[in-house]
Structure formats: structure tokens, C-alpha cells
Amino acid sequence: MTPFWVTAFVDLAPEAHVAGLAFWRDVTGWEVSPARGDDLEFVSLLPLAAGDHLRVQRLTTGPSRIHLDLHVDDPRTAADRAVALGAREVADPGHVVMRSPGGFTFCFVAHPAPQPAPASTWPGGHRSLVDQVCLDIPSSGFDREVDFWLAVTGRDLVDSIRPEFGRLRRPADQGLELLVQRLGEPTGEVRGHLDIGCSERAAETDRHLALGARLVQTYDAWTVLTDPDGSEYCITDREPRS
Image (cartoon, rainbow, N blue to C red; front, side, top):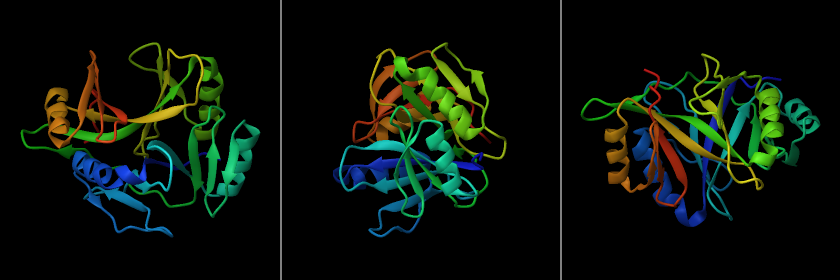
């Protein structure tokens, strides 16, 4: 059962929620939806001219992280198939919470798919869009984890800018890219980070620093920063969707 939409969630630790939500609101330039959930823990970040693919959750315990929602017609059937592929089911409170073979949290949900969001344009004319999640995979479990995500998403694996990366090709009607990265560390749980495509990386980096980000490292084609809670993310030279 192939997902017809993928949503990224920024899951924020309780003490990081207020500052973190404000940061990602300002990074995207999108509006914050009314809060929902039993404890008003969920919000969406809403582009002005399209649907959303980025949401924020206030956690009750634990550190901040990224998780994915895979939108499918039948979450129960999709979850059973994922278990057969090596995932573990965590809970079924109406949506099914899962962990991948490498320990990455994701959910199967039945919410409808919106339209992909366009990039935001900033003073000075450059554009940017939070439009990719990179799965950071320790080397010993890389092949198994990638095979799992290929089977679950139905996407094709294509080469990326460096040999340690691969891209799960995004369908044209979906908003979120998926990248996989083979880490130098041999073991550990799979984790994820957000990537931002932009038309002018230096200008976009300066904008983030002014919003409270911290610079970690600059590479040929991307820049690593941390958000106010210390979670890493990247600004890349990928041209964002118009």
C-alpha cells in the first residue's frame, strides 16, 4: 500500500516547544494552525497557497526529534505489511505508530493529501522551502533500512550528490523529498533531520542565523545548522519548487 502523501513532524521536547514552534514558523513563513489533539499538542504550518507537509508536535517527555506520517487509504493494512517487512508496531490510537527496523518513528494515517507547497520568497528575492527529510542511518543497518523504506513508500532509489547519499524519488504530486544518508558510525538508531532547498544559500543562512539558528559547518553544497533546541538541520543548494 503506497503512501499518497508524506508529512514531516518536528517533535519538540516540552521545554523547547514555544521557541521551537516560533523558529520553524519564521523559517517557513507559514501560518500556525489552531492547535488540535487531546492535549492540544499538534499544529500544522500552513503555506498561504497550498496544503501542508510540515507539522509540529509538543512531546510529553523525551528529546526533540523528527518523525514521518505516511498517508494511506488503510493504516491498519499498511501497518501489518510494514511489520512483515521488519517494522515494529508501537500503538494504534486511530493512527498506527511504528518504528522502522533501525528504530525511526513513523505513523500511518488516513488524512487526505493536499497540494504541494511552493517556495517562500524573502526580501532580496531569494526563495526557500523546507521540503526534505534526510534519514541518517548507521552503516551496519544501512542496506536493510533503505530496502525497508523503498518497500514501504514505493519510491525508486536514485543517486544523489555524494556516494553516502541516495534519494527516494518523489512523485510529482507529493511535497516532501526523502533522502537517505549512510553515517560513518557503525551502530545506533536511525534518526532524521530536515533539509531546506534554496536559491541563494548564503542569504538563507544569514536569515536563519538572525532567527536564532547556530552555524555548525559549511560544505560545498549544503550548510549544517542547529535550531534553538540544538537539533541539526541543513540548508542545501537544491532549487526549491516554484
